Length: 374
Image (tube, rainbow, N blue to C red; front, side, top):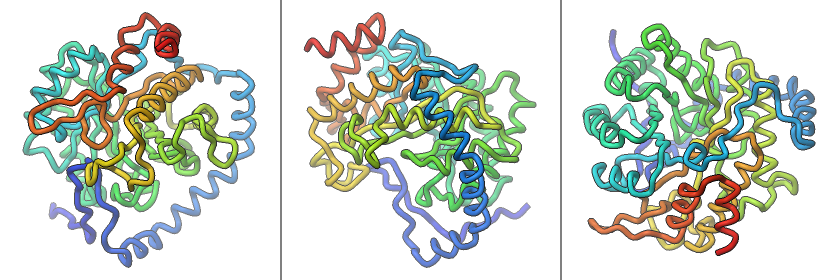
């Protein structure tokens, strides 16, 4: 079969480890217009389910936990982990730092355009035998429009990492055009291609949809649908960095706690997922990091604020008892990591010590007390 060629190319910005925004604005608008039908479906789903979700939200705010909900462990090592890529520093050094800080849970990004280096990812996984690893399989536009290529990439990555890895996040940034999706329908059509893996790999778990930021309509569309994909856990890249502190409110209502509760209300109505909520990516960008920052300088914070905001984020997320796991993005990254890799040397930011304290604590309650006493 002839491979399909994408009409749009979205360059990768290596310093910040994310794509550039779509460069061709006219083509972007054309693809968005072509997806109008799916936008209307998303709107219809949100209008139909909003009253039910609102009722669930207020019930959760009042202390009701949905039936069958996966609660977090009180043990920090079970609750906290890192999402990582292999671009910020040599993977051998990254593996050493993961061992040193004592993390158990790792979410590893493997891009489909990086398969020529797949053995490096396998070697990295083997170098952290103490960790439970989730692999996030990241897409590009060509794989989104060519499902044959996508299925081949899925097969290659899962075959190479099984049985060391049994949990796979399908796609990333499903609600963002710079991540090459122009509708949630495109994401769901891509995600359902992974369903064949259940027949080949007994016990495999598929994670999604990886919606970025606090956007309820894309989450509704991704979790209430008729596509042939069921998620074993809900992935949410729940950034709140544009608000500063996670305790600041958006629209006068939604601080981090309320955002998590709203996501849980959507998930409680989901037809195609289990009741497990993971925050698979979050951080704050740091000041004066130039092209290594994933945002403009306006959203960047000092190292001291980063440390405080991170502590509040993790503690508040755990206190909701609605988030099973939080993966911090990431351990080593110049623009936003706990560690800055500088020409072979490592600089440990203040947040590194705080995260390590939490991991070493006997419980999240003890971790909160330890940090507040400092």
